[in-house]
Image (cartoon, rainbow, N blue to C red; front, side):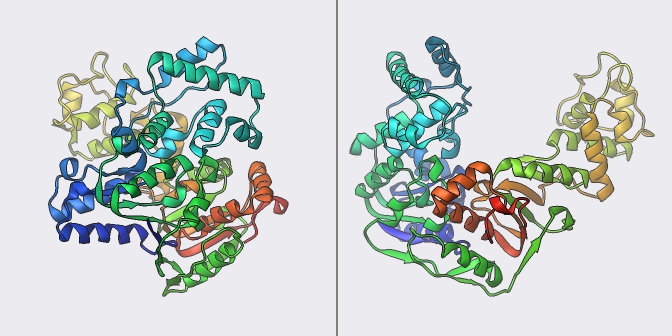
Length: 505
């Protein structure tokens, strides 16, 4: 297994994709190449690039361009109807008389972060012990879970018995099933590429080594300095200690030299790491310390606002709304697409333009029957979604009472007050709120793989993170290293509110 170390912005994934291109050019059958990524986004990127360049059918030719776990899950003999879902967990919870948190519906194609997380602390603890391949009691002793050991052990025993009696499997069962059956399920490959290898758990490493045995050549790429998922079972030490050859990509195309200096000051604090050097981008960049995020003018450009914990972003997102900025937070737009379409749709109608039947329905959904609409016309049953219609036609044929002298907030009187206030602030600022937000507020963990010209980094630590920092400083150093290295031009370091509980940058 050959390792490729890719420091931030050095083109690690691109390097792997170029190697895929070279193999295809050399005549390697695409079904003999596996490209396995940690996230579905990365796997799909590789698949789309190879399909476009070599005129391949993604669904037929590139069947092994996928996430590592989806390979393991889809290649077993376990059927979809045998997969544990929320209704099974509810039934199990009732049977044992212990209330467990609901489990979101997941599919084989979901990212591993979605699959392994649990809304219930006991189920999460059990799963983490299995991913780490450690005794449950050991994982329990390492945790701060607010349940006694007898309860946790009882749930684990009953869950195993329930799954066996019902012929059901959870996702970790399927990973174990794939890994333990060796060559029974795993195809043979000419080349196998594994991205983000530093984030693999011990159980996933079992699968990686199985792939290595079943491949003529295997490359695993990652960066131990960016290993920030130990809490989810990742075993970065395994990646660091892998035998065999390695290569370090030596030039960052993202990080300018002033920001690189800050990053190096962090990474040099890490005790357990593979030593490596890389050159920054040939541009100075800027590093600035600020006391308050509100002091920044974010009217233009791409922005990432990063914190160690999600709750630290809530005051900032409230301020962004008050100031009329469009942004995304935890993967969601600050104003829904539906509200955006409704407001834009009404303003188009007011200007004498046509909108589709689908947009007209969205507009109608925010209008009161009897005040803005004639009763019985709200569903626009006579219009197809693709039909085009004007305001006059809606008034004449489709029960509309609102007229073009009404602005959006008057016509759509069912819009929540909070949405009205926010849309007003957006329009006052001149923000185009129907496109992709320029501003993203995210935890540092959620920003992995992302980048922006401007990065705002909060240095506050939560109480739990501060305790963890004292126990395992390497993990905290890696988190802030990832945060700093998202910046392409400007890094704004925000002073902590409590200097006794902060990360020193």
